[in-house]
Length: 400
Ligand SMILES: Nc1ncnc2c1ncn2[C@@H]1O[C@H](COP(=O)(O)OP(=O)(O)OP(=O)(O)O)[C@@H](O)[C@H]1O
Ligand SMILES: [Mg+2]
Image 1: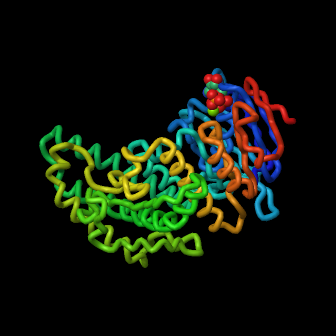
Image 2: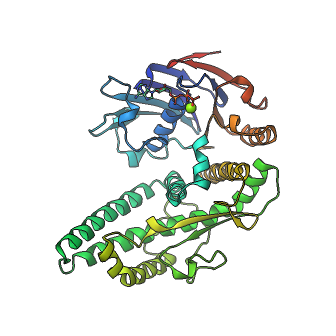
Image 3: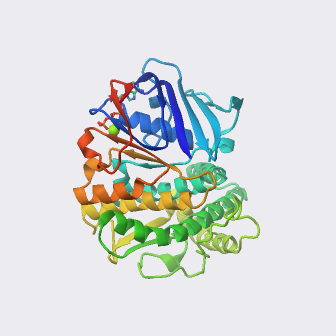
């Protein structure tokens, strides 16, 4: 698929912008602070209905304006779809698909993107929540129904945490109330965990190739999912899950096979593990008034050459691994959809890389159906990535 048009109104530093894009490579060149990342962010917004940079929509609206509008035409399998989002901070956003109102869940998947940004280093070097976010974002991109699972789980966590807090303040839990939230935490938590486990198994074989493709080095990379609620996957790095949670890696052919529905055998085992952990930690949870059990405590463990990447790997190795994780996501999405390759968005990544890695990354992405690349200077973009060229200055885009 590719984004054949992107139009912005009052988005970030753009008053109005309208760019026509073709398949293949498009490069956006501009000095610092001119609007390159904003443009990439807007393209990504049409795929996820969220920003990769900020958690709320308010910063997306141009200073002094009331709302922002992001429009895009997605060309996939010979058909065009028009996506329009009116971003209304503090109120509900309005989304339309081919001019008819739609809900985000209905529109997820029309545009699929994989966004590479300098901040991706945090997936490898940052806190576990960065890695969980990497997994969950990819899960939603693969199977949009996980947007609902994720939202359900987050809602249950918030409400259960509020109950634990008020129970602590009052010195008592209303009988049965916590059990109701435990049930919901177990079912939403197990669905999310099952999705993540299957995803990790699907990424695993792609990651090693992606790592050597980017770094040029044959190092062992390893990726595993550690369920905090399962003592068998505790801190011992060599331990295996104490129960077989079913990391089959089979994401299935149909959209629903990863859904973790009733027929999902591993989900029941995960539910059991969560239930045991909840029982074991109930006192601690009440004492601390914090949710201590669930996939919000899990970790995606990454290793290079047998050592944990976080705290051991060099800066360059961490970068290669972060790029490899994005490339693996790209390969996974690419193999999954009949709608064609996901759009690759490369925001300012080449400036961070040495010449060898620049050229290798360029060689891998050059064959994608569409690649949008930004750079502060033309010379940072590898010569293998030739295509249309745009310039951006002060929120104004010009072509050629
Ligand atoms: N809501 C907003 N209203 C107006 N201007 C904004 C808004 N949000 C961000 N900006 C401005 O947009 C400008 C461009 O930001 P952007 O991150 O796109 O720059 P960039 O071209 O990617 O720069 P760099 O090369 O440093 O990454 C910045 O000067 C920023 O202050
Ligand atoms: Mg930028």
